[in-house]
Length: 462
Ligand code: UD1
Ligand code: CA
Image (cartoon, rainbow, N blue to C red; front, top):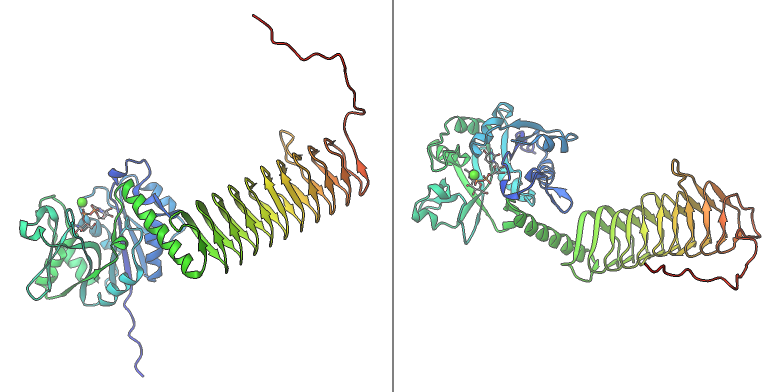
């Protein structure tokens, strides 16, 4: 048996110094998001899948916040203060390139970059300049792949430098390429800016490779979106829809029922069990897990949540940082804020807000309530309009409601307060002291009075 060929070390250079003028934004271009993750984060995620020894990002003017956004990543940052072209950008990275490694060049504004296409370039990069190209019916603005009669790649000619004949070529350069560093550093040192744009073109290395008898291959990808760079908000919105369409297709393939795959937005990771149904206009953010048979009705926004099997989320419900137990029913119009944990068979109804509240099995909070900083036991019923007064203006206090409690409608529970097991609280009570277990506790005006001669206030005439 022969030992498997050891792949040479890999350096990945990501070009991200461009200003992004056409975004008309104070946010650097590469920090705009696709599917809830920045464009550059997507490129870096692809790079990491290729297990490189180094990831070098060439950044430019105003890029400090870009660096800060990736402070947790192991990245070598190289500044290109003035954008003098893609060749000049890669030149800035040369001090960091490992002599015996190969390099893959990626563009920081191509968020859907395809890892398989990159692998294919890298496999050839040992002794070849491998370029990713694609066919664009309207190639205006792109560098053209110029091939000879045998089909070998001879050059890449930028649109502005191309002859009329060359402008008819529809095979264009994606900007993604791979090559041995020993060659790359030599070719970079030979670049000049004698061209229409006065820039140092990375693409000129093709001609040097041909001169040096190094093979140049251009692999044509048919997935245009995977090589499309973002230059404007229009591009951003187009790629967002493409990305969301792909996520929806994956979910459908897994067996998720989507009432309309075009009306779903996943801005993070959505994991679904079997027989999950999602109605239209739902947004999922961060990490969301839906168990088997979960149904999400229309217009829900769900962020960082785990929803256990058979739970139903009714329309217009907002959930953030919450856990929802099996067979629960939430909404319509419910708001579960961070720290909400609901056990199995719980019901949370319309216009109910829960925050930092733990609810045990089979308890119900069905109408118009605010319950914050509370611990609620099993089989509790919270009547309509109940409020936990958890905040005294300075500090937050907890409300504890034990198993089997029935809280009548329109009750205020002034925390800190504990309601004992099986207690019943009469509607309209303002509870300021702990309530013992069992029994009926009433805390209202002593008696019901009628003032028979009372007059309603009259409008004062001016
Ligand atoms: C480049 C290619 C062109 C290709 C096109 C694909 C060159 C000379 N041309 O065109 O063949 O068809 O990409 O989109 O390489 N960048 C820097 N520093 C610079 C200039 C650019 O970091 O000085 C970065 C940009 O941030 C961007 C990438 O390089 O991520 C491509 O730059 P861009 O100006 O969009 O491409 P073109 O030069 O027009
Ligand atoms: Ca340019």
